[in-house]
Image (cartoon, rainbow, N blue to C red):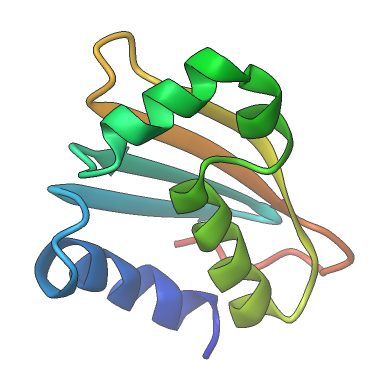
Length: 109
């Protein structure tokens, strides 16, 4: 599995397979990866975790963003950090930015 495979198949898994979200976008630019999750079934859970402790979301991410970080780690073979993790004001969209550590630039897609 590589980053291209993940970029092409994770949205289908989230939207059609597991019905976790209405939409999932993954954009790669060098070692930076931006993920946008729309209408996640976990949005209320994520908002509650953020309300109780924003430190959890900022350090390890909500379970959904953290699982994406694990998938990115597996796909790239390199450690991944969550740089930002922010829900929209209405909670319908979660945007997370990841950084692949120790890798040369990934192809841009």
